[in-house]
Length: 206
Image (cartoon, rainbow, N blue to C red; front, side):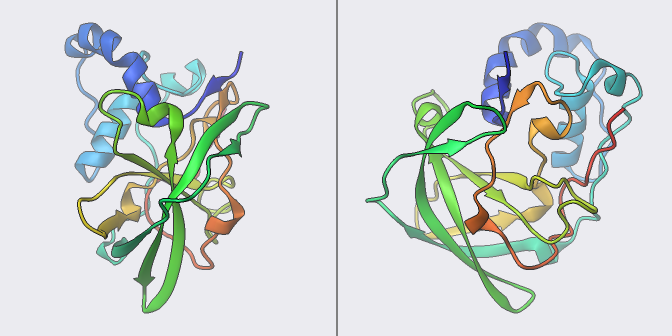
């Protein structure tokens, strides 16, 4: 059976096992930032890694674009409280119930952009993820320096209408590493007509 991909869900389901196994393993700390170190540690650990066994054996760390403050932007959240729930397609026949929580308006390198940010019905009902928001996006690096299917960013609902998007924390869907996972497909409306040279790069699988 295909596995559904959403990093918070994977982390949630593996939390118990990590309590018993992660403490016994040497932490894998390669990376320039805390985000990169934590992601590399997660991918090195057999209990939390989406990597295939043969890829994990030789894994020394993900490839990242150079961290760049240009890709940390302040966004204005335009909430859409009346948006309807819909079935977001995935890379398998599974559907995930989502709604557009709002539209993020921001500027990058002097040009205006906007992205829909989503809220998942199943995830919001889980303790600790009530305020989780899902930001999938496509850009002009896809298929060359970054994964062809686009990337994701994890966000939390802000108290006001201001939200920071750090593209340096953009990560690949699990199906970029292993086709046993079922990953939400990035809606075409979230295509940015620019190169987002930040976050995780494409992965060379065995």
